[in-house]
Image (cartoon, rainbow, N blue to C red; front, side, top):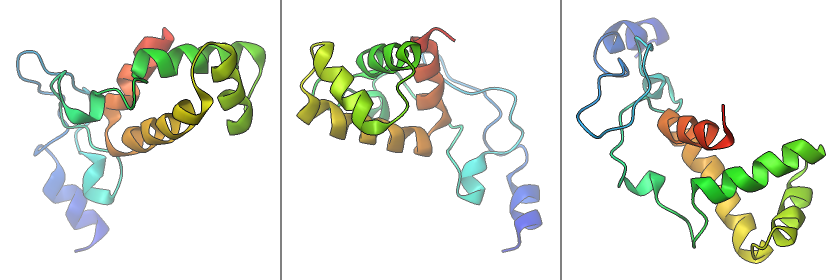
Length: 121
């Protein structure tokens, strides 16, 4: 299937931000980027597995470390993992959890939206 046909077929089908009661969603996107291999804009319920903590590291904990890393100008993965230990998290747990959160954001824009919300944006 060609790129433009995928876009044409996807317009109006998903990604419109229409969410059911109690769901989290992304609004204002006429096409779900997932049809082109990008992260989905499909709404998620708060108990969706993509939003659940990874070995005790949830979005609020990941955002806490990320925000502190940003404030300190730490931009590399090793520095963020080291900082997590300083902030009371087990770096051996935090590192893999951070990688999984990044992966989940690549799967769903809602996860990224919730992370940005936890960062205060």
